[in-house]
Amino acid sequence: MAAKAVKSVFFCQECGYESAKWMGQCPGCHAWNTMVEEPVRAASGGGKTARSGGASVAHRTGARALSLREIAVDEKQRFDTGIGEFNRVLGSGLVRGALTLIGGDPGIGKSTLLLQVARHMSAAGLKILYVSGEESLSQIKLRAARIGEFAEELKFFCETDLDTIIGVVEAEKPAVLIIDSIQTMASAEVSAAPGSVSQVRETTGVLLKIAKSEGISVFIVGHVTKEGTVAGPRVLEHMVDTVLYFEGDRHASYRILRAVKNRFGSTNEIGVFEMGETGLTEVENPSQFMLEGRPLDAGGSIVTCAVEGTRPILMEVQALVTRTSFGFPRRQAAGADLNRVNLLMAVLEKRVGLALADCDAYVNLAGGVRLQEPALDLGICLAVVTSFRNFAADAGLVAFGEVGLSGEVRAVSLAEQRVAEAARLGFTDCILPAAQAERIKKADGVKLHGVRSLNDALRVLGIR
Image 1 (cartoon, rainbow, N blue to C red):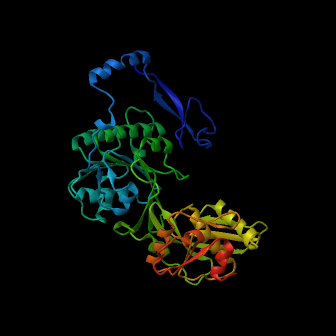
Image 2: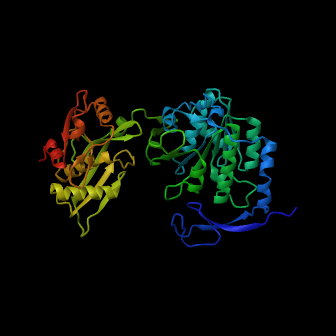
């Protein structure tokens, strides 16, 4: 039998776009100089003959389509990972047979998180296989020593050859398989180098087949590019069931786990962790964690409330407004959308009368969280005004609401839950949209100040 012909195609290293010829700019993601040549095996001919024999193959194998009534569902299809914040992001636990991708910067703590998940699940009696292509067994043991004791159900294996890994999986029959990382795995079926788009696609496809056919829950770790996306991202994100991103500053203690795709739960939930000497610990009260160390008598500091999924989180909005030393003022935002900040500053200048055209402005969401929720608008505006006027707002004040181009304060979702979170943490005053202040029946000691415009909010602060 003649060997399959080998041809070359070009893949984009950023998005996985495939082309028969080299191009300077990728048509998929518009990145420059990202197309690389990789050999692929051409499919064998005879497609028409193969299709004509499909009916006989289906008859011989007994393959047929099923109605919903015929499909059996396992009531115990979710595993408890032993970490509440991780369960929240996944959607009440890990689904049996799910393929989950965890991405993040190198050194952010992805391997530590999965090692702790494996520790908890193996302690509950589940067989776990942890496959590492980046560390030796001795290195893994040194890292695991600071986390705690591990059960015998957790097995480790260091290998990069996919065929060898599949053999070990068939022998061990684990309930959960962890691959760290997908960029180090290589299949003999593909002649490209490990980490290339072809290898990533092939190895992920094999792991997906194992997860679905054997009912094994598979975690794969993927490192991100300088743009913040997983290498070969669109190829992977389309193939897997769940995509989680582990975010945070490597030099800070906090970490945030965020779902950007989840076939079995919400994509709005986040999990908050803190990195310590013994690994990652859950932050069950993110609001208190985000507000630690905030100044109580400084201008430009306002507490606002955002909602991530079903969880309201109080956080501090900081602003610094100062006269510019140059002809063109500088605007910078950390955690918030810079375009939105520029829009809100234009509203303040037009509707409130602040002379901000010759001022540098810096806006920061303390805690390293990146949010784009409209409810942050009022907090950003008040932080900018108090910094511009050198006015210190009351430390017990919370403000949230969307701000329109006419300077009006518009309603936002889940206002009652936001007020309840502020009351739980001891805040005494809340500035919110007037329409929602009238509908909230119970405030638990929080005085509600309903406002219809930015000028109304400034009067509540005592600036106007």
